[in-house]
Amino acid sequence: MTRLGVLGGTFDPIHRGHLDVALAASRALTLSRVWLVPSHIPPHRRAPCASAPHRFAMTALAAQSIPDLLVSDLEMEDASPSYTSATLDRLASRGIDTTKLFLITGADAFREIGTWKDFPAILDRCHFVAVSRPGQPAPALRQLLPTLSQRMVDVLGAADPAHPSILLVDAPTAPVSSTAIRERLRNGESIEGLVPHDVAHYIRKHGLYRDAPLKDFE
Image (tube, rainbow, N blue to C red):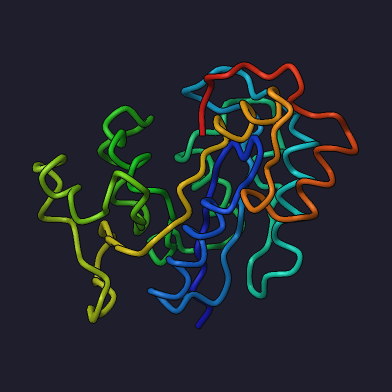
């Protein structure tokens, strides 16, 4: 049976931390594949610095050499905000049983789940996978979100829950953010090791982020 994970994001630009989150979830849950889904219009944040085509291209470059990691244009299909609930609707319309789907996010992003569209109903539509990020270990979400703690399951050694749950993956992920990368590029500093080589080459080739705001989003 195919075990599909989905990691959405602005990916402005995609970096090692994003990839670490996807791969940590894939390993912990033995996923068949993980789709990286660049958002067209982030619903909770300012407009991205790079265009949707540029962000999609960089995500494709990042995924091309990693087995079972694919890029999807699912959220590029229309110009409406890329709400997770709308993405789940699109997946369901393609015949995917979303209750068996693993929607992956960093623990820092999941901490804000209460602000997401269609919360809390969205929690019943798929498994959520929260992966540790620097400064935000996944297990700490139990204390930060006590009203959701009964839904939370430590992945290590656990079988798949029968019903959509919040799966906690405590694994190391690179301490890097898109904001920091854009700041380094704006200051003419190296981003070596922070993004895949092909992504760094693409950024240089197209002159991206030279005048990017210092603070935006991850």
